Amino acid sequence: METLVWVVHVLTAVVLVGLVLMQHGKGADMGAAFGTGSAGSLFGSSGSANFLSRSTAVAATLFFVTSLSLTYIYSHPAQLQGVMDKVEPAAIQATPAAPAANPADESKSREIPK
Image (cartoon, rainbow, N blue to C red; front, side, top):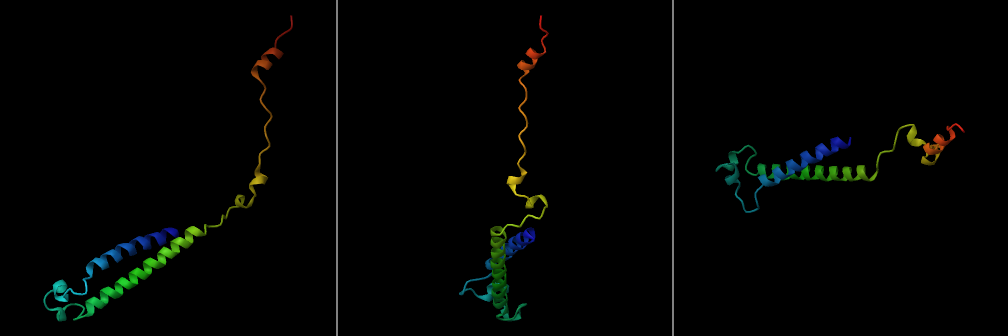
């Protein structure tokens, strides 16, 4: 799920940057962007401005939602589902092993008395 949110987040960011770069300022003429006759363009006389601004608003909203989703995912880590995850760490303590015998002591005990 986290990977899916990341992919949507990155793609939305790229689309949002592209949409913002395609838009012109308030003083820009629509004829400069889509040819001289803006009334005969694909979106109509003022349709391209509305289409780009609405698309930008949708992309910005989706970017905002994915940002909040990623924040929620990382602030609430997933609960562990394994059987051993439910055992408390204090109960898993290993018993200490007996200390190994000193090799020098073993060689003395094996000597044959004269």
